[in-house]
Image (tube, rainbow, N blue to C red; front, side, top):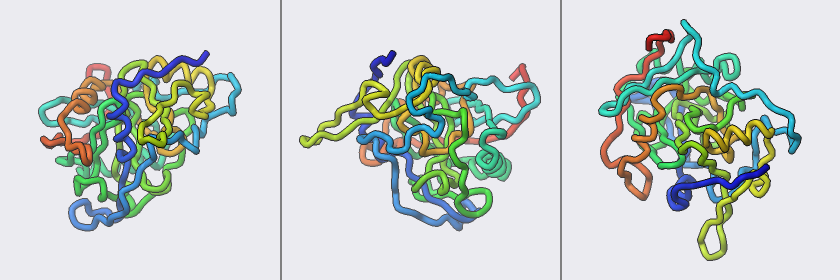
Amino acid sequence: MMRKKFIRSAALILSAAFALSLAGCSSDKNNNDSTTEDTTPAAETSAETTSANADNGETSDAEILNFIPPEEGEKIVVITVKDYGEIKIKLFPEAAPEAVENFIGLAEMNYYDELIFHRVIPGFMIQGGDPRGDGTGGNSLWGGNFDGGIPEGLYHFSGAVAYANSAGPSTNGSQFYIVDTADSECYLGGVQNEDGSVYYYQTFEEAGISIPQNVAETYYEKGGTPSLDGGYTVFGQVFEGLDIVRQIAEVETDPSNDKPLKQVVMESVRVVEYTAEQ
């Protein structure tokens, strides 16, 4: 059964057409960042590349990894955001080995410390990890872009963590985003009308997105941005601190570039061993 999505504000999602840009080469975050054209998936069109995990309309269930809780002793990421609190992220090294290796390596180099969330779009995502703070910088652990692929079993549910890119997952660098939609809010993309208005798709079928039934039902329950599946490398999931993500998403921003007027700073990004007491 297909149910309608619920979007808080269509105008906010329209600006998502300019949200997931990145650039990046070189391993020195302060001095050697290259630039690329500011590009992004278009929010006003349906994704031509639907989920790599799609089953072409069949109803068989697919594996969903996002909500598997961390186990005692495994590595997690803790992002401490100044004036907000901690965001805790489970990583999926078996599904996304290079993507996780890159993030852990950069974090352990203190690469992300004191960087900002430079792009914030409520009901869509928050984006950071750019040393330049404008969406045009950053680099991978290996000094250039890397290909993280499209990991199986990981989807853009609310709280998912993925790399921004400029031309597919082979152009991953350091920039990442965290999906921010309210529970049950599901953004499916849309089309721009001749008069400039935007029509937002109401069902997976209308959007041309074919995914297993259990994945669709999880999107309806958890919220998310299925229109991004198949185009970006998801490698983590917020398991604690999603309320912090949503608080950040509500900050006042410059309408021309979605940059917070008051900086939202990642004081530290640490890789730690998970304990039940955390």
